[in-house]
Amino acid sequence: MKTQEAATNGGKSARSVPSHKERLLRQGMQHFYAYGFHGTTVDAVLEASGVPKGSFYHHFGSKEAFGQAVLERYSRYQLDLLGKWAAKSELSTADKLCGYFSAMADHFVESGYQHACLFGKFSTEVAATSDTFRKQLDTDVRVWQSHLRDAIAAGQSAGDVRGDRTAGELADTVLALIQGAFVVALSTRDDESLRSVCRSIPSLIS
Image (cartoon, rainbow, N blue to C red):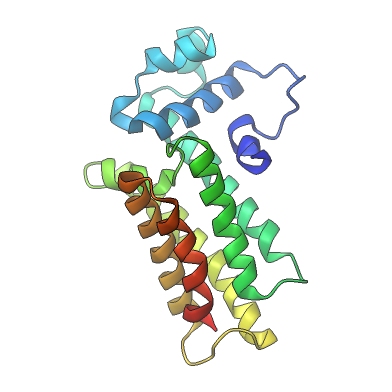
């Protein structure tokens, strides 16, 4: 999927030669998706990227700082993908949100049920034990919520989103639905549980 590849590849052409930092970030995204933070080792990332260890510590200093940099990249990917769908003026708000989620779900399935939500993976693995990660995840998720809220508020102004609940409440509900669907699908590998989200979004917000 091109959008996710942009997150992993930094939006660069396959013909360009990535820097050491870029190669590390690409492999970090892949390894954290597949193995989580604790299951990923610096040595494994170095071997996969072909980058010398000195370059890793020059750019990031520690595995924790590296994890933060990968999370920052993932956050940009999520906001860019949501922004792409929110900008489709020909679609209803429900269709925009369904398109956004479907793009995430399609990549998840295509990745062999590996690339779900990196926020969710890190939240369950390190947020409880690392104040650094918890604060970053808190900030990133709140920004994600705010962008969902803005899309829903625009729909309320356009008249295709219910007005008896605030945009913030609806955004929280939609985000919880998205996160929950990926958690379930990680265990069941059931495409249908993912597709049911798009059937539920219109009834939640309309």
